[in-house]
Length: 438
Image 1: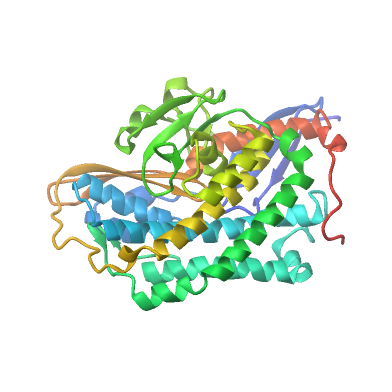
Image 2: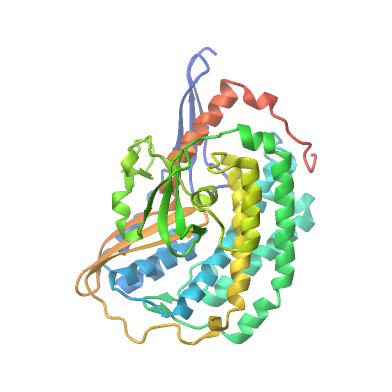
């Protein structure tokens, strides 16, 4: 190599958002730097400030077209925490049903549309063939299966939230509307079909993991800290405490959302607008953590539902706990997909799900400081609001999944880049024959 070289991928595709990848190689061919650039500004914290607090849950879903439901619910939980409001139990069950439907739909589309093309055609296939359009063309039955699963989740969200993308029914003190019995019966009638499609997806995922086990266990294996919600050691995406695991697998923090400032550190990167959130007691970069599916499976002892817990045990037999295998995120996503389905089935069969007691009759705005945390499909999501004595939102702080993950993404990319450009490790990997050859 005669000189330094910069490789830039702009934009990064198959990503829920906007990003650029910049790789810098030295004259000796060694990797000098890897950057994941997030160059768009959002200003949502400033959009929220100066408005009545109850408007926040209607504005927050616009932050992300992929995760509007988690933003909606983190927002309304933050308002309720600031005003010391506890919604009725039936309202919490409806919210849980909506966020599990989002988890189910999102994990489905991520696996089939964003991950599957690499496994179907092979990671070194022509990008023109390695995409979701090609999957739709070459494996129509698989594509139809994915669409049915995603549509089930999105329709359930729409029925509960009034909109499939930007819900409006979560309000301080509960839910604006209840769940009708005829709607409940409709989705109950589809459960058998969706369960079979979910099990088909699990079988497909297991084949992918088995076929690509050499890649999973060797490429971009990066020890970091991990963060995720837990409900007494069981994986929960709506409520609980925030748990942190260190790279050796020790639980080093398990705290209430309101105490997040003691544990969240924020590093300002010179090459991106998205800040890097890390485990404050460990410092930066030593305390870099990752969120998302694998992180949640790492920090929790068990899944909350039986089939998902059995799937988690199978995953741990292959990759252990903690798993630092970046490609194991795909496997963890399927484990969570199973739990999402089981939660949906359980809640649809709960007699309280059609209760009309879903909102408090009177919620009084007041001065307060509240934190709402839920798990978005891509990681832990936090909204922190401060209101004045008139209930106006005077300060907002949001930490989204990207903030929790971006430093870990760069660390993983650095390891993978060195394996490719320096060690040539990819040349000795055992790769299966593609499912579809072009």
